[in-house]
Image (cartoon, rainbow, N blue to C red):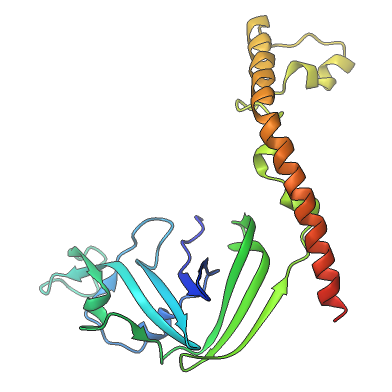
Length: 236
């Protein structure tokens, strides 16, 4: 299943993507709208995107866009083949004459991530170096805390670096084909294909290496820095 597009938040002048928290959901559950949201894409099944702002310790909805289904009145409401029209809506359609809406209906916790590391699509989670947890009651911020995640050095390495010596076709390079060499077997690949594979990987390595070295240095410094801060936070 495709990871879902997260809501976006502005907090202390910075823009964050929140991890799978939908404050508007609590409001929609209490309303008797005569429509339902239409999925925008496989990455947005809820059918809308929203931008939130936290100002003066209050949560506001400042922008909204979505798509809704308007069903034909004559259709049987229990029929799986009901006909409908799709209409795009904005903030003013949900909250007329309001440029920003105080989310007084929302009580719960919002997690803001900073320093993206990787996405775990199997568990629909995103891993960040630092996370800010904000607790709200009736739209008012009542508690906040910052948590630093202990992330292994391996998890910080970009996927393209881990796969740098893997062929896109799924075939191993001839000089990495240790099994065939140990069994004294000849490779089933034509010589031209072997040569092209080796040449392609050599060129790729020469192009990527300078950037990879710089990135690995940055990752190493970041890893040491985070571990120092993590240990300080742990013992304070």
